[in-house]
Amino acid sequence: GESVGLHLPTLSVQEGDNSIINCAYSNSASDYFIWYKQESGKGPQFIIDIRSNMDKRQGQRVTVLLNKTVKHLSLQIAATQPGDSAVYFCAESSTSGTYKYIFGTGTRLKVLA
Amino acid sequence: DVKVTQSSRYLVKRTGEKVFLECVQDMDHENMFWYRQDPGLGLRLIYFSYDVKMKEKGDIPEGYSVSREKKERFSLILESASTNQTSMYLCASSFGGLTEAFFGQGTRLTVV
Image (cartoon, rainbow over all chains, first blue to last red; front, side, top):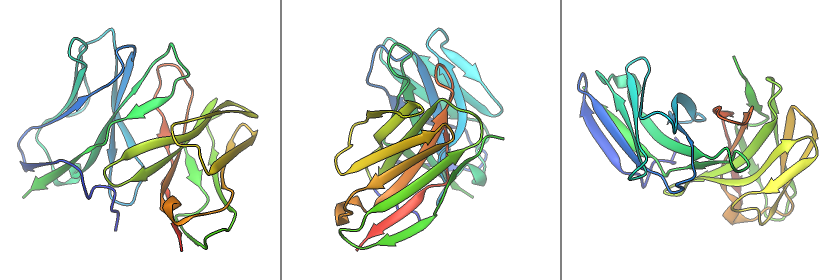
């Protein structure tokens, strides 16, 4: 199986509860942020993004919050389901650079039935 | 749907072999990337390309090279594979600017 999550921080959440996954980013010049979900044996999948001129963006069951003052990003998942179990990564990018993405180390979300 | 396709899911190669990992995207993206993913280290950028025949080193380029002869294809080359290159390799592509990167399914390479 996929071993990418062996040393990751883990968040365990009861099915139906809300999940909050946090990420601290490094570059104060970053102006674009993305959350990815990675299931075992698969590549990362895009969940939601946010630009630095916003502090909140909502999708279907997901909300991303951005606090530029403390360089912090969070992903909130409402009514967490078993299919949400995965590793979640944040990524940052700067349009003043070469559009490279810098990824966090990830958080494993475990949904308890 | 955007598709980023990596040529192999699993590869086993011997130390010293030259290894080619291929990636193709079908959305006319300008940018393409190669990352490796290791437990506890997240995704680390090896190389990226922002146009045909253009490339830039990422954070860990040593032991690797890349080729982008056509816009849709980005190849990662391990000149002489070593056991410390055993890893999951992920290819991605994007339009650039304020847009997300799309990933392939990954290639798990084992060097023995």
